[in-house]
Length: 417
Image (tube, rainbow, N blue to C red; front, top):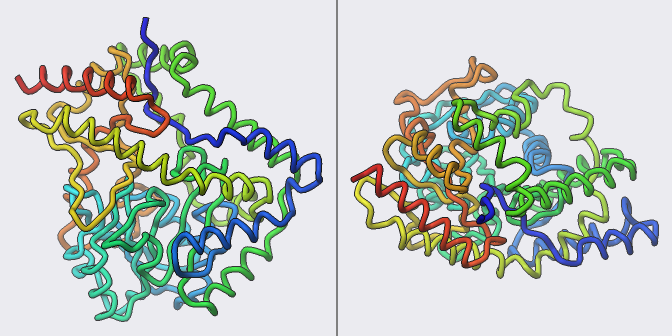
């Protein structure tokens, strides 16, 4: 029997346990020199900007907002299709959230919708490089300059992606990155702000360094949870643990996905776990993992090309589109096809775990009931929410990738016959 393939795969540094053991023995799990070294290496890799680490990517975003000193009650525009935590933290920072639509062919912020959403109260925009594909940054930056808007790039999915040769996070005023277990750079949590202006970066650093250090027990537990997660998504372990639940759920029409994600809720006051500093051991893991990032990214891109070849000629199926001037890193590989939910069930029953919506149509959430939406609404976001996300992550072997492609093609071909 072949092992089932999880929708998720973590990028794991082989020396992780050695790094943790060495720093624990030296009393440097929490504080130590690797934090500054990681920040310096991250900024050097980007080629510009000042890097400041944070407990989460979302907190890096929050610190950027506070450091920019945007007027309280002013408007910030975000794509309607994004992770709910980002607009929620904009609200905590005292800003009024406005949602613009996305281009359903790229899943990224639609510049025309952005322009329609701007009012005299608008002060900032957050182009989200969703699923690993950069936004149309030339168009967005031109609109931002015309209206004197601050541009904060959401790069949580997109470390390693480029727009016209420029790394994401270096095009606007600032960018923020996430290092959670499934992200392009896995530090088992944490994030980074990358800020163009030195004075703004200094204010971001003051906010981040004002937080308390986490206690050792919390950090050790975080690393343990990350280790368990990466074991559970290995094919053979996944086959005898989570996959049977998904298989039975497919038979009875249940949706266990709701238990995988953080509860959608107001974030004011900020949760205790948010308001702490980035520890040395996670920085050390990130510093070493930076050396592996390009190889991991290229392996993922190679798997995406296999999927393109397998699915691209099927009638009624749309594979991801990556404009020639952008590098897609395929945090998610998103496909449109008819009868999405039925196709997902058929793939699960053949041992391939397919995801549906990885983020949220935030303009539909009760949490943002008072938020404005650009005049044309968000039809692109609702269309984008119908995509399927097919595994292409770097930890798949070439043989596993070929099997995913073969099974998914077979299921999709039957649905369009």
